[in-house]
Image 1 (cartoon, rainbow, N blue to C red):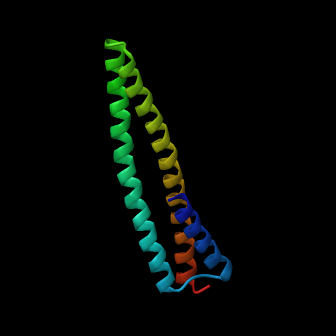
Image 2 (cartoon, rainbow, N blue to C red):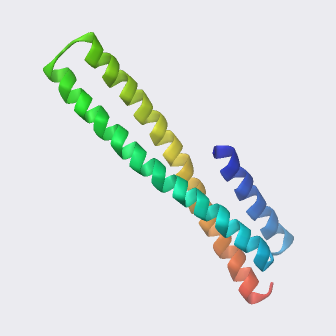
Length: 112
């Protein structure tokens, strides 16, 4: 996913360096941004549920101190950390793409 976002950012930057984009190119970028926003929302929900599960497993671990609950807690904390990092990439990539598409639309509207 990170590669796809970076490739799309690179494409938007190339269009800006070229001097702008056509309506067709901006529409294509809009569709890609919509896909990334959908992905971001899905990962937000997943991250929230994994975080909640990690918190619940922490309470269970504190109540029933044993290796199985510790293993569950450790696995969920690692999974949560991975989701946080992935969500960070998605969030920053979508924000950057939104800035670039706004600039492309400004150039398209001004005819630059």
